[in-house]
Length: 244
Image (cartoon, rainbow, N blue to C red):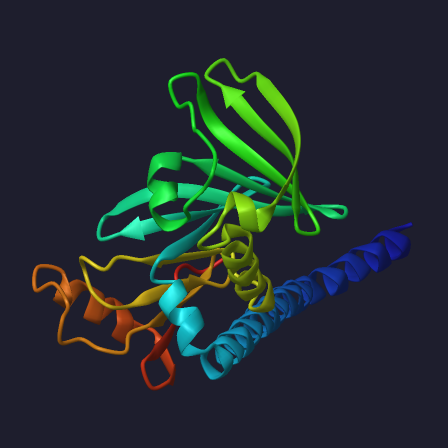
């Protein structure tokens, strides 16, 4: 009986001697997995940043100084910006073979896109235009009580927007957003001539071509922020905003 108990005791002691090794190995594997995950995430962000920096053209950059992109849940929208203010917001989406353009703050919108339509902002706060091919087939006005008032129509987009077509502008902007998988952009002309591209909630890419006209009040902060990132190309800095 004593021999059996002694044998069990020795087996337990041998097993206990292996526990530190097992724990160390487990911690090592966990750390290695996290390192690999971080490396893969960092590499993917750098590849996306290089794709944008090496391919985006001047016309796209200039347009992104006028319109900033944002997301709120499933809603995607563009804001027309001027200095530290936004003038109006629009959203653009495809619904099968129909394209929908939604406008908020339409009186500022009309300054960019002349429109043969009377906006009644005393009663309505949102206006949606649905286009099939080159024809506006429906206009939906949303009341302040969130009720839709729909008007079926058949008018060419050229007639409704005789000077400049917002569908074309928003299609162009959406193609930029989709091509580079952006989740947000920002531009503040009152601070400086630079654009921030959000590649993910964790990574942003900043394009800073010129520092001479930066607002002196904020210049040091933004230059410090820029230099903290990884310079992937002249004027382009990739920043990890936080560690997961």
